[in-house]
Image (cartoon, rainbow over all chains, first blue to last red; front, top):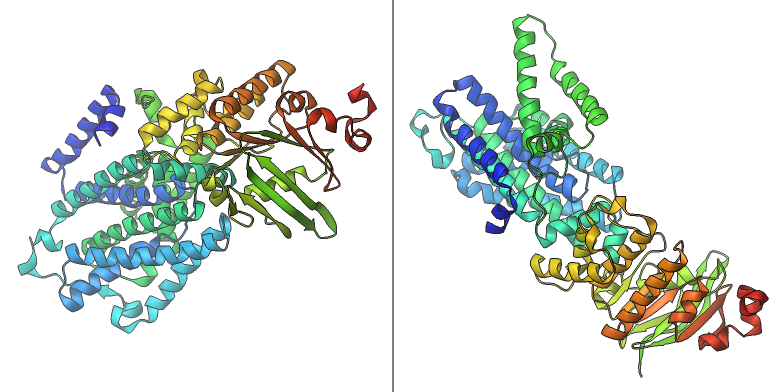
Length: 333
Length: 242
């Protein structure tokens, strides 16, 4: 930890401290709407970070991460609804279930040499048939969805994630900061280096004694577990879960945009990407609503265009450019 | 001296083609052993079998007293065999140092000692001043040396080198020969190399195996092997000895 702090330049420390202070103090001035957008940004920064770990560092393309969000959300919500088990405990079950699914998909893919696009197809398939399964599962509410009831007397029970916008804002901030710290630490570790080796050239990595299978399994398990925590947050924030919404492939795509735009395989890429994309998307929705235009697909089109532009203009993402501009390039250790 | 690596009756067929045909040899601990032969003789296939990239159809490979044929490449490396690739395969986006650290991590418990070890290896291979450069920016000779550095960082008992001299200028070849000789002398690392550059083979090897169409046509001390009529006819050509 202290080694990590020492690797950050003075200017980097100042920027980091300033950004964190601003985010901590923002609720003093921001209204409910702005806080809700910020919460969304931080949520996408968090789940984007989880995906970034797997794709950006370990080089394994998953297009089905909505599966882990959904599983995490459903497990925690069901434990809360059916057994009165709070999310602080439920999150462990959520993580366990999602990680088990992640491990199963990973095992199938990596054991049988399904790589690249084919692995991505496998992840989509799992998310899709889980969606269809949940559509027909009676005790999860099926296609009609699952609702966490609003209970006046429970409001303010922050330990049960029952509270207002402010609670969820700080929760999201804690999650996003925690994820940044975790990724920064893990990518400087032995495991992180081995991920990079496998991402760059798996054959060469194996020739250097890297157990590529184990390393990739670690990536998918950690990434799915992290994503499931985001799912628990999602369930208690929105208080409703519909299979057609949470497991949708468009959800998986939405979740990977921030790291791609911000910069794959960088610690701050997903955060910057979320801060760029989410507000623009929200502005666009507000704008079309104000103009009275009924254009339900406008956000998707906007994301698509942004992605094309970013890939053409800055293929390694926005963050490396910003970092270079601000003089925040990490000191060589 | 006892054999560190021994191959017995190794065969590998690709459909009709017999790439390696009943090849047997022993590499003693501490020696430098060269495999030579014309293109398509089966050298790289033989190499791939030892490194675990291919499983032999017949025969066995024994390393340090245990069978290693059929093990995965990473398991072979963990047993103590480091290899290079004929076409260098650096991790392009990573720095030179990080490339070597990944090799060093195999036997070093933490990042700090892996980094220290990686720097020592880079020093030995004249790559120290390029350590922060991305591997993709290296020239061919540097890539070849990085390839050796990475394999060496795993602290192998046996180093497999697949044409590390190919494409090097004579002075660079001499430098590589000197590095390998010093390595062999100082650390006792056994080296098995595939090589076309006879100048390097003659300078390094204490034992040479000549393959032709997958089969052994000669084996022995380099001075003896290069005068073998079969070797001259199939590979070296008469003028090479002249």
